[in-house]
Image (cartoon, rainbow, N blue to C red):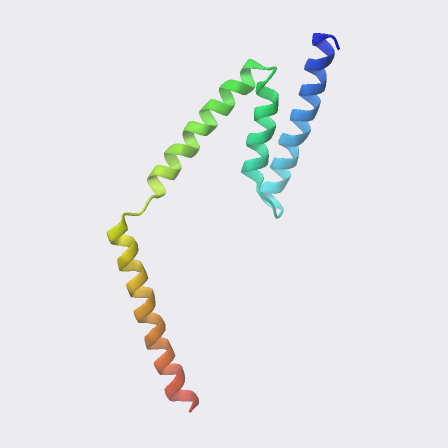
Length: 97
């Protein structure tokens, strides 16, 4: 297989996978995972796709780090939810029986 044919095939397959990922963003499915897969396929032959994939990974990593909740806060949220569910259970029990 000549390098140009391989490059064309990788471009078509990677582009289609990336487009399916974009559709999966609005339809049920793991859209971002499919997009990253498509970019990974494209990155095997195209330098611009490798740069986009690297910057997307960095942005996803930064977002994940910002979303982390400290253990102390996790326990406080769980305790509040348990307390609220017990209060609602008592209220429901009082009004139904």
